[in-house]
Amino acid sequence: MKKILFASSAIAAVAFAGQASASEPVKLSLGGFMEQWAGFSDEDLPGSDGRNNAFQSDTEIYFDGSTTLDNGIEIGAHIELEGETSGDQVDEQFLFVNGGFGRIEMGKNDGAADAMGVTSPVVGPVNPNDGGTEDWVNLTNVIDTVPSSGDQNRFTYFTPSMGGFQAGFSFADDSQTNGGFSNDLNADGDGIVGRSSDTSGNGDNVVSAAVAYDHDFGGVSLALSAEGESQKEDEWYGAGVNVGFGNFTVGGSYGTVNRDVGGDTDAFDLGVTYAMDAASVSLGYAYQENDNNNIDNQGLSLGMVYTLGAGVSWQSSVFWFDEDAAGSAADNDGYGAVTGLRVGF
Picture 1 (cartoon, rainbow, N blue to C red):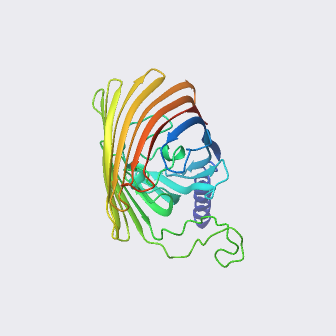
Picture 2 (cartoon, rainbow, N blue to C red; picture 1 turned 60 degrees about the vertical axis):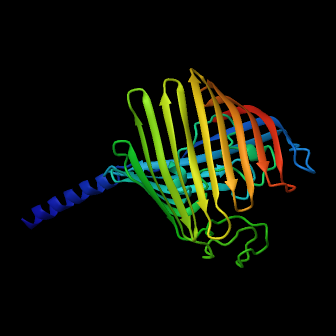
Picture 3 (cartoon, rainbow, N blue to C red; picture 1 turned 180 degrees about the horizontal axis):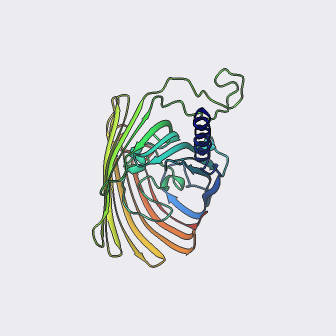
């Protein structure tokens, strides 16, 4: 009897071990994009003839890998590498866990408010709402209805989508532990050149949360979001909506920043997009009033995207901007045009 029990136990152990190793090992795959733009701008900033460089580019390489465990839970990693020399060479890197309970992310990435925020449906390389105007002209402020804390070492949880509803929550315990690069010798006292402190502990907690709704009602789509973020005594809140019907999508968003020291900032954007086969065109407007430095901004863009093939698109924008600095030397306005190719891979 003991031999039978021992043999049964051994068989069960072998079977269990076989199940435990049934998942495939993680293999990294490559992805990313390359954008190459040509354009010009004309601005009315005292002492400036505008940007001299008529060419701009942005390239990122993505490394992705995941495996599905025997219990159905997916575990993987995502790493974004800047394709040009940058002070933040690794843009984002995080581990994720997917399952029936939702999605968990841990690492350096955007918070839930930024990831889930809905803004106006503008296409093209230049969007007046945090979309590239500052790459072509000199701006003191950039309009942004979702002014999040950016990439932080944080924990994020997204609920499953239930009837179109989803919620997300993020927490970063120190806004300065991001492993940034520095040109200073021995920047953090460890004798290593070019790496700033990753454990300084001098930053503030960052709490980010959002709720969103996305559903198609028989040809009419609706996307809604409400988001916010808190860092020490500073807070921002926002909301957005997009409605799609036929070939049109219209929408907009609003965001407000409440600072403990200094004035508040209020911003909104509006946009409409028309899609026709391989092409889409859009018109977008954004406005921001910043009491912190008494500078108001507004911008307008007409954009176009034409799909040339799988992952390849020709994109163009014509834009106008106005930065009213209440009579100071920073007062600026002007216009520009940009065209180029985007290759996704």
